[in-house]
Image: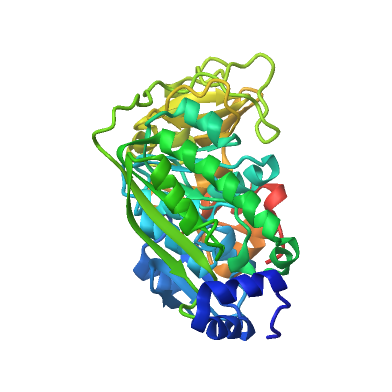
Length: 461
């Protein structure tokens, strides 16, 4: 690997910053970059994952669900990737969620979340319990975030497209744990991303440091007493890292410092990263968020409401709660206890012609821009229901009474949009799996499974 041409101002600063370590640091830029993926614990147990995956995997020290894979292997071009079995993620980036340590039942916010690596890691550790609010301020990136949330089968989630200031107004003292993976100067990515080098400047470092302070301020407003904030960057700059940690603690005496760590490419198997963890005092009085169900959304390009619908009040669709439960059990062959589990701690809401199960743990989101208001379960097409792709992606084999389980070859054909053969006794909607990883829906008739994999996702594997 050729050593990238680094900005001289960056080199000079790192010499001052690292002293005797600089030569080792600089030499690491000649080393080949490392490649990582993370098992999606929502769709697989770790032991079975390592047995099934056709890649040469070795574990990441700081994330039990993380693995390195060789450069010449291409997991992004495999059917298991489309089925959400794993998320391709730079190994050092897995450290922030490991430090946050979300537990099932926690209410968690990921404030700068696109493209979704850390959010899907949080969701997997929540195991479907509690709430994840994952946010991205840039609309196009929020759409990518929402797509990855869907692919990895996350249920208990709200995807928003807002400023952190707006979120803080709606969620005062609400979250148990908050991740601030702040936009930064990207110095830690220089070895893998030439664009980061081209966009770097001392002025941009200063701009990023100020922007990070604003986001941290807003995160402090959303954190409940006793709650945790993890601050994360992929840069080496002290202005964006240690200086901001000191600034935050000075500005917010209600928080105490627990730990921090620098991941340096000459010391670990990964790119540059910085993480710090704060805890909020339990003695702080703070107004907490409510638990009222969603009652209205601002429409986005990703999910536009029809003119006559009132999203969130269950009134705009024609199907009732009982109708949809019956559809899921009788026509989609989802076990009754699994349907009950889907509806538990959720409220049925409509968004145009789409039906969502929205976590009841959230306050009213009236006025917020919501990209994904929970788990989409079905849509109303001219007074008939059709199951959603999101629902299929969230299902495990034990949750359905009838399924089509394809091998890799036929699974790849399904992803391309082809019809596949199935048991002639099967009729109607059937959830399709690839070696026990859900991938979508098919409609069975006379031994043929008509393909309902979304056309926008179809591709040659």
